[in-house]
Image (cartoon, rainbow, N blue to C red; front, side, top):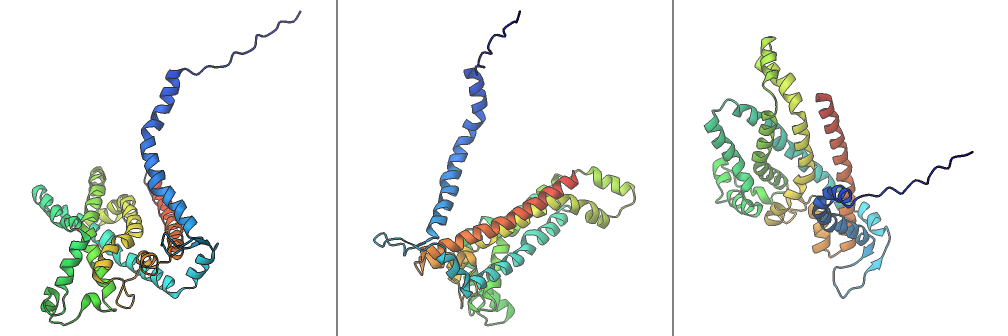
Length: 305
């Protein structure tokens, strides 16, 4: 005699459980929608545009050229020159966003609490100045005849319009604006480090210099990697208002970095396909650099834990 097993009933999911599972996604949906609309959709359109030949005029037809824009871009000397200039820009910005902020933040530990607030506010103030306003002020300060810089140095040099100095002027002004932001980030990283490490090291006989070298800086490394990543990704973008206001990429292309070059291709040469191709290559290249820095940051954070 065999016993028959009743068929299993399908498991019903209650409406309450569905609501509980869907709630996190409902909270995330506005951010995801904005991310798709303002990031991924324009990126997809840029990739599509990079395969077309178009002069941005609505009355002009778009013509598909495949990968011809990429081939043409890679054979342009201006593209490689602007990439090299972008690398110089990033390297020139790192002292303002990594090295100097660490020195200033460590020095501010010796300042009293009330004075420290004023100290940080004074350093942070240039970050609040609009780039266009900063460009106007610095163009006046660097004027070859009436400017404060030339009168102080006793020179008659046109700093912002000299091919040998124009790029360094852009780097200096951008670094002056970002220094305060970087100092506050470093100070926040220092505040998150427990004072128990310093006390234990002093009990073992470590000097202040040894504590900074072997304890403070290693624990601060995730913050420094974050600032490095921010410098690599944002510095060329943040220089755009200064370049467009002060030099327009000159003199003789001395201040034309890759961001200004792709804007020039689109709105001066009216070559939308070439500009989009430069943007796509820029996105891929900087994305790879960002991925490497994020991977290093995660390794450092895991090692510290």
